[in-house]
Image (cartoon, rainbow, N blue to C red; front, side):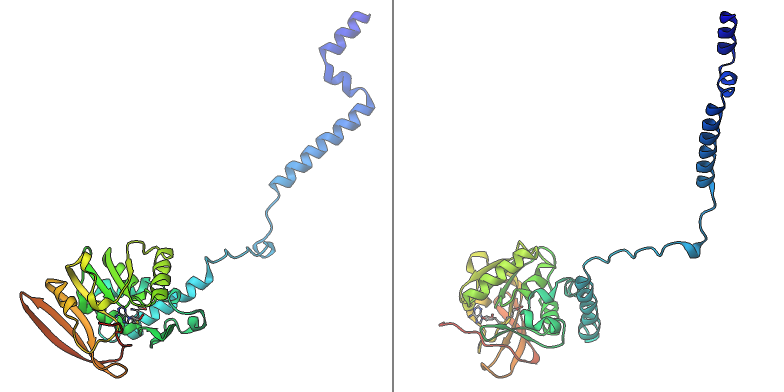
Length: 274
Ligand code: SAH
């Protein structure tokens, strides 16, 4: 019978196993467990009120957002509202991070409607003046521009947003150095800065499509007029040091200089031993 019994066991192994009470209990427990797990998986999800509140996405660098807003407001209220229409200039003013060009103690005034000290008795010009002078230069991408008076480098950065050929001369060595480093750090790598007396321009790269002078001489320096291309524009404040000057737009036409007085402005003096 052993063979039969074996046959019976092999013939229906499940029944053979189930006939043992201890195994049955284990099987029931395992099956029950599987059933419970399956139920847990298909159980209805909690109602929305039971959902945990999702964590808000961290906003990208909040300080940048504050300055972007301030810059937009500056362009709307101080620049567009006062008649600047050149889209390239408006875009440049909206792009250059002016707060990177001011001393840390003036950070909260970086986009305010006035000039600010930059050290060494010098100032970064009022945003509107920067935009107005840039518009007067009437430059396009590819034009070669010379600036006299690098200061913080802000005006140079605004010019560099419009054309990739910007040259700037600064007479105070420390300012020339720090502006050069700042411009590099901010990605304005094509701007060339030189420490020299800008009265003499920058002969090596002349002639220029446009020249902007951001300090005031008491007469138009002849080297600057000479380094202008035919049809080139010179924007320059001229007048007594320490007082008010007139802002001039001078256009070179052949051997003539056509000049237009645009009104009163106030700049730090052009210094140097010329
Ligand atoms: N454009 C600057 C602000 C200029 S303030 C800016 O965006 O920040 C005027 C600058 O002209 C000062 O830095 C002053 O040192 C410089 N300056 C005065 N006389 C100069 C000269 N002869 N040559 C070059 N720079 C001169």
